[in-house]
Structures are given as structure tokens and as C-alpha cells.
Image 1 (tube, helix red, strand yellow):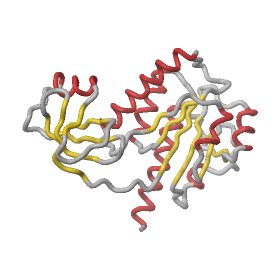
Image 2: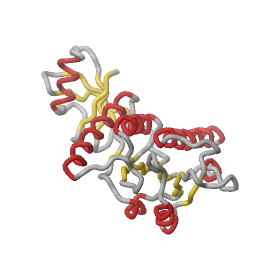
Image 3: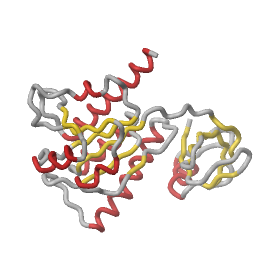
Length: 242
């Protein structure tokens, strides 16, 4: 079933307006027919079924019951090369992340001025929207503006971890902190060049706990996917045990 996201709150038996891009894709590219049903997710909350009217409108026919979200996952990810960063955005959406917080790091290869930051933000939002539609999410992942190491404490949860490649073998693995299935997790992933020691000190002062992802050194985007997969697995395991 085709899916769209809309800004406005939806009400049964009323019209809803699609933005230009989604209307073009649905009506002109996919050539949706009037007999088809569309899944509509409101950014204000709620999931609905709708029928196409004349472009760019849909007509809400039914409301879908959506289970409450039990976990909130924040991914704080350093800026990395464009193609790898965009893959990370897509996979994070597929793996259930709630919020993505990009940040500048000392060893980040990518450097953006304010104008480029604005353009990248718009592109990233579109990538997130497309990824959420593709995997049939009932919500839209929240994307924050680019931050600094010093401001990441504003995006903490009950369990706050930083994946650090220089942790020794005696250090705790990420999975050790997930055994109790924390309801909100904030996890920090560094850039291609890793973290500066001073950055780790800042994060530790802000109560982020350094953890290891194992013996192998992972690419930044792989580390993010691995960490989110561990969190998703633990959530699923805890649900089965209950």
C-alpha cells in the first residue's frame, strides 16, 4: 500500500492536502487510481486510510490503530562523507531510531558552512521521509540541526552511551548496557577519524558512558547500524520474554 506523510492533523471524512513533491509522485509518477487506498501518517499524530481525489487531495476514510511507542532511540552521529552519511540515515530509520542528531567533530572530514548546512538539512529531511515511507513507519524520524559535542547532553535519554574505538578489551560491550531494556537510549557515533580524547572527556563529563562494539574497528556508518541493530534486538527479545 502506498504511504504519504502530511503536516496537518487528519480527521475522518475530510480532505487532506499533500505537498507538491508527494502529490506529484503519487498522482503523476505512480498514477494512483481512485479505487486504490493510501496510507496517511499525520506528523501531528495518527495513521489513516484515504482515497485519492483530484490532485493534490486525499479523502480520509478510516483511522488505523497504532500501537504506542515504547522505546525512544536517539542517534547522535558525527558528520561523515555524504554517501555514507545518507546510507546511515536510511538504515537508522529502518532500524527504529526516533531522533537523529548530526554533529561536528574535530576529526570529521566533512566541513560545512552555514549555507551548505541548510541545503544538507533539507536533503537529509527528504531522505528520512522517503526511508520512513519505504519501511511503513507510523511516525516520522525527527532530524535535529547540526550540533557540537558540547550540546549533545541536550539529547540524552535514560541510557547514554558513546561508541569509542579505543576502549580496551576490559571495557564493557554496548550490549551489556542494554540487558535491562532501557526505554530511552541515546548513542553517540564518531567520524571516520574517530574521536579526539578531549571530546571523549567532554562526553564523559556529560554522563555519556564509553562502550566498545567489539575487537574490530568499524566504519562510522557500520558502527551506527551495528549499535542500532543491538538495541532493536534487545527490545524484541525483552518483548518476547514478557
